[in-house]
Image (cartoon, rainbow, N blue to C red):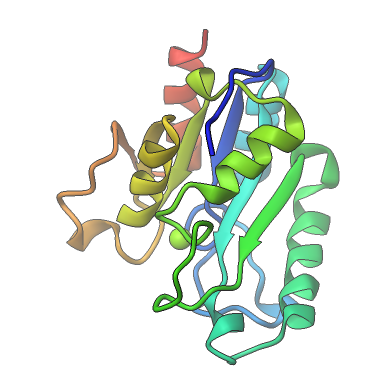
Length: 181
Ligand SMILES: [Mg+2]
């Protein structure tokens, strides 16, 4: 799966621990809590011309913890809290960790799908997430990577492999806007 060069720069965002509080295997729309700065940060990225995508592993489906319909209800709640004008699309992967998967992060499959579906220029794009697998996914897709410290794993994970580390999504957006071309 080769990534050809498209038109639009993009920001790919992990969901849990990056745009909303990580409650571990969220299957209940009532538990969706955005970070305070999520809408503002995404608005700044959209205003600067970036397309914005959510790229999320949802192994809770593959593990049988909840159904795809449960996941969809949570996705709909996230979209309604953020506002559909701030998110171009969401890609999720239901595969369990032990399944061979070209889509489950750190594999870059979901990023390449977004690239094809939305005519994206990966060389001008960024991946933001709170885990090492997010940085690896971005790197595997050939985009620049930022690790945010708003999730569960960040502090224990010194060797994160990201290009930058940011305390939250606002700080990540500032890095992106400084390096946008
Ligand atoms: Mg996360």
